[in-house]
Length: 495
Image (cartoon, rainbow, N blue to C red; front, side):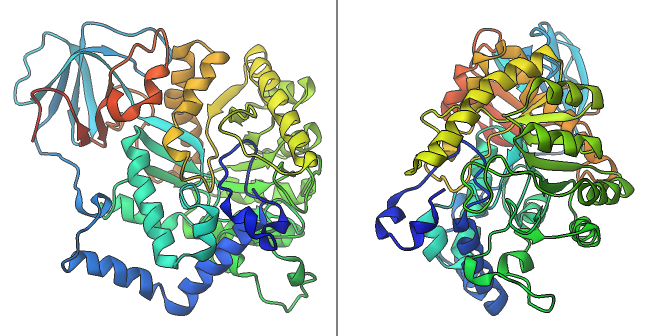
């Protein structure tokens, strides 16, 4: 993210950044949501809705609003395939997959009589589960900084809807949204109004004052007990909470709105203006208040944190998912393994997909995180920590199409099938931590009887490489979500 001088230096407006350390501590996020959400609050989204209505009354509608998934009442039988079932084991041969009513009905012998099923001949290709991105910001990934600062609110939400379709068309059939107002888009996807992945929403990022989710401008400080909430707080981007009582209230509010898990900011970040990378945020009592409230609803807390002190504090109170954590030491990693916590890592490697920072201080923080990333993947394997894959792409419309490249990068640290299992079956286990708060009933990330029928047919050999993921447009031949076919380029198959 750009520094605070972004607002005073016009030249900075030309810089769009990708990821390479969590971006959620940027003042740009504050300005973006102040503008976008104030528009929505004052005008009830009239401008955006008028644009949508115009599409339906005669103007050409983009495909995100006009296309419908192809599906039917007949069962489907995928045959002539090599099966990757999401467990990480070798490809299975001589099987077929039967889909009925949106679920995997059975894995059967390849020579079975299809009966009443419609046959999809995969012609020897690999069938695998839909991919799961465990660290995604649905509303914020595909809007540039310049557009976020200057566009109509309706446009911002239409961009998010369009990107949701593109995310699905990259084969990402589920995402864990770890901060931002994603509830409305989730509802629209679930109702079939727009196409997109399944969303496990966290709602507002809960932060202490001066923490990684405090996006206020300096002019908004101090805030008295009677001062109104900031615009981004009112609209569910972030929630500032100090003390156990406030953390408890803000956590319960997100659960009320439909959060499947809770996200707290327990440490600083690379792009932060206020909170340094090495800062520790929230006391144990404050963190415990959120953990207890989430536990009372059958779900869990994930925390943004990098440092050993912050990681250990979070684990001591029962946090179940460490987001980032690239500066962890061996003691912290052993503790993660012992507590059975998840390590939600992203391949922040200070490479072509990373932010370019103008100041030496943040470049140095970025370097530390990149070096820590290499150590983190090594220690995660050495101590057998449950590890998730995610991307954390933010404010980067030019880079969202490279979402799967961040998965292919993992072959630097893992064999291809193990990396692919991380983005399918293992991430599905992480989603299942939401328990009764999970918005979708059924197993995700696996191809097994009873699992939700999120399937991909691919051109590629994941036993050798994941490079085929770098070109999903050409190499993902069929994309199915919940038994509905959203893309098909297999010969001889159409509906």
